[in-house]
Figure 1 (tube, rainbow, N blue to C red):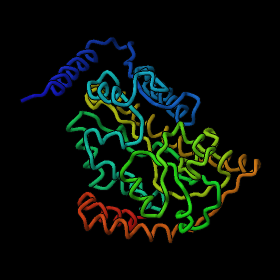
Figure 2: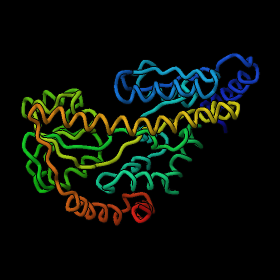
Figure 3: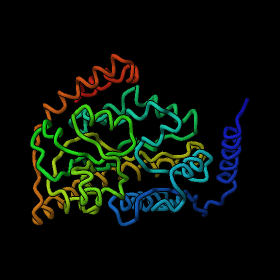
Figure 4: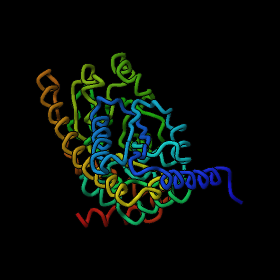
Length: 336
């Protein structure tokens, strides 16, 4: 029996197709693009770049309107609208797809890939692609182009009050943590004490001593000001992050081929722009913070990743990992 959501999605598909057929040649197709990020953030600039290029490449046919800073609602509301087609694109970490595909929480496994190239190869494995396929089958949403082309991060760091020169030093920190079972399990395995704090409470937590360390994308280190309370920064490559442009599949399929190609090319160019912009911002951030007395430490990563092999082996033996995940990871590493 067809569910209410499936019926609504089917009717929305018919409506979108009818609008495309009835629209005049001179009328632009308006797409609503939802994001959590402010427009002046690095990611906000990438999203607007995409919107501008989509209009240019489609000769004005595609009018992608970016709604920053959760203007269209919090994540739960946005996902409902994305499924129904009243929002056309939502760009955020793929973790939000757990609403429909629980296994996709393993799309960015912590301390499994030392390089971004290995991780991207893993996200293109048959296993990872099957998760995106499930999202389309269940909710009618799929990624535009290469899912991880748009870069977030560009890498992960540990910000701490004392230097972390080796993974053994993790046993001496009290780490700000968030309510995620996977992250909690990993950092407990590495020996950290954990302090549950909201992201917006983290600065005060560092200041008061509730925590003496926090993990973060490199791009957010300066804007959040954590370095003022914890002046040591260590690159960890904890996990890699991308921003899939998850779109309403029916809306895309209803477009003329010319406009589909315009969106795909705009997305590809936005990915290249994001990689350049994020790396530039990370380099600039390091130079500026070092000038303010912040110390960047280089922790050997091989021992850390070797230690995590035990964690993965134990979880795989217990059936806690998706079937074939470690095999997909090893194949990705071998390919790179």
